[in-house]
Amino acid sequence: AVFQIVKFEYDNTDNMCKVHMAATDEGSKDVAKLVNRTSDSGKRMLFGELLLDMGKYTESQKYFETMREQMNSDDTEVADIYHNPGRAYGYKGDFKKALENFNRAYDLRSRTPVTSDYSLPDALNSLGVIYGEQGEYGKAKKRFNDALTMVEQHQTSDTKSKVLHIAQSHSNLGWIHFLKGEYQQALGFHQQSLNSRKQFLGDDFLLLADNYSSIGAVQHALGQF
Image 1 (cartoon, one colour):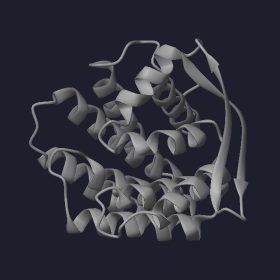
Image 2: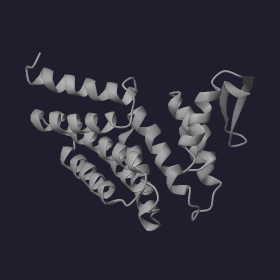
Image 3: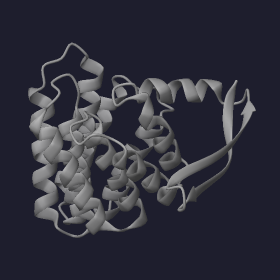
Image 4: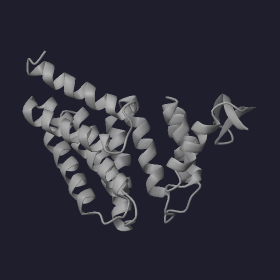
């Protein structure tokens, strides 16, 4: 069985998160996928990431910040605990706080880089998104390009993961060129992203829908109805 969240509350007196759950057999396969998805960053991150996926941004933010207070500053997971509240703040539109957390996560990851994962380019992409949302397109483009270069230079036998990370960087660059009104460049990057993802993802995968939507938006801007 798995558990369904019934109620979530933060107890300021005890400085802890309290979660009320009920057992259920529904969603077992989805939970298994989430566990596998977060295995690199540690199972301790799973609940906070689930809250993010559910749109419980404030609750997720408090969960990770409470975790951070209880961990040693040299713990290898501290960078992830800065990164995830950054996501929560970004979703809430608090870009200043998001940048503070993402920059801290990137700084920590830079000090002790893990060569087997993509945590550094992921942090750069997150920073780029926030800069893009703030209209700082030059800073955003630099972060996206730096992330792309880092992924391209990454040595790994996992071709699928590498190609999909490159596709994400291409998608991000397409987005920033679109915001700048550089539609031909945007179209090229979005098409590259789509082609890369189609190598490994099924036709009904949601990420492909994002690509098609982005390409459609660019074509509309170009008058290609």
